[in-house]
Image 1 (cartoon, rainbow, N blue to C red):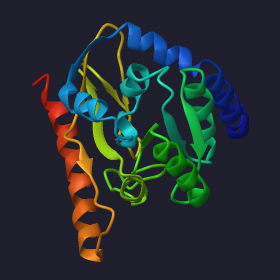
Image 2 (cartoon, rainbow, N blue to C red; image 1 turned 30 degrees about the vertical axis):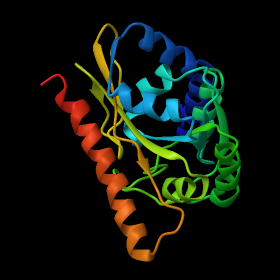
Image 3 (spheres, rainbow, N blue to C red; image 1 turned 45 degrees about the vertical axis):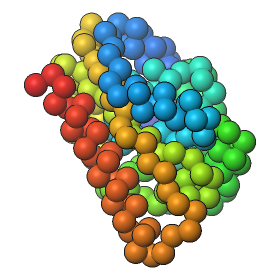
Length: 219
């Protein structure tokens, strides 16, 4: 079997059955939500919301927030198409684009969702990395929409961690898992260049610290 054929088979399996895989592993995991007060605070205020997740820590959050009508930004790459088809079946909406392709059009579609009080999610180090490096899309969306940025991560007690660029974490069946919500961040409408750098660092470090809290939960 050549590489092209393997790729086609992988695409078919993930696109058609990936959502079932996520749903099954989620239901077989014992999940605890930590920092839920941060999410409740934003919900109570009624403000638009952007969940930000590192690319390697998306699996459990996809399960937890299924069927909530959240709009996800998904890349135009082949792996993005697989993700898009899978998450549609879990009740997500998607816009297609990233920092490398189709980003401008996707940005304005997401902005429209947020201005109408919706919720979005972005993986700001995707689609190809570098890992844990915040690209500016989420910050500019929050700046123009007035949305809160809410870091979200997860860890399970005995994860399978792939040797990919994002160190993708897979939930294992019957494991204890934790999803951790970080402190919400609001970005002012008017920012100088120095302030943009400040908030970029603040969001990036907030996400990294939130992931560390998730990693430390079972230690």
